[in-house]
Image (cartoon, helix red, strand yellow):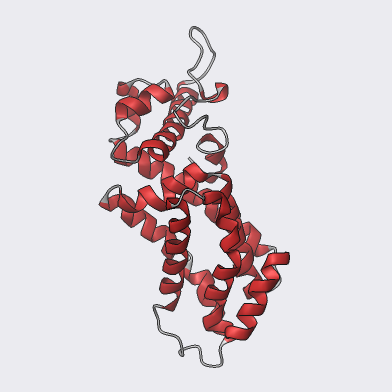
Length: 238
């Protein structure tokens, strides 16, 4: 699945307890006219939506395959034809969200005129996305880190994917080697940590309020404290 299918695990994913909306419900019986490929795609989409919902509500360890297949209206046999197990399904869903978020951030950044404003636009897009989808915020920022070693690696790789865009800020420095090689990693880690605390507190909808602090924190090492603080204040009015 690609990022274009994210609504299947987000906006169209139904309520908190796994009740999927009609367009993600079970296929009609009888001669529905769908090809085998269409049926399999529908089953996969419903399973991804279901695992996001169940994990967001009960945590990875509290989620069972029995609950996932029931919420998705898919048989256990069909589940195992699509996924090796719960972890595999989780990773697939995480990948869909990751790809969609990367696309959102990339498009937001591309519309800006310079590097500082590209960073600000990317941060805003990510915060707005998770604020609108608190279930996905829990799924990605909390559960992915601790579910299994494989999900933790996938989360780490997703965070590190932001390093090149942030490292473009070194061009703003007179001496591009003046910052430690791990600077970008540390900045992204700090941002994720603060966002995660907001999600843990149950106030993911307030994530956009963190934007000025994130702008100041992310831009300061490259632009200096004064200009970073100015851009942080500016981000409040954008």
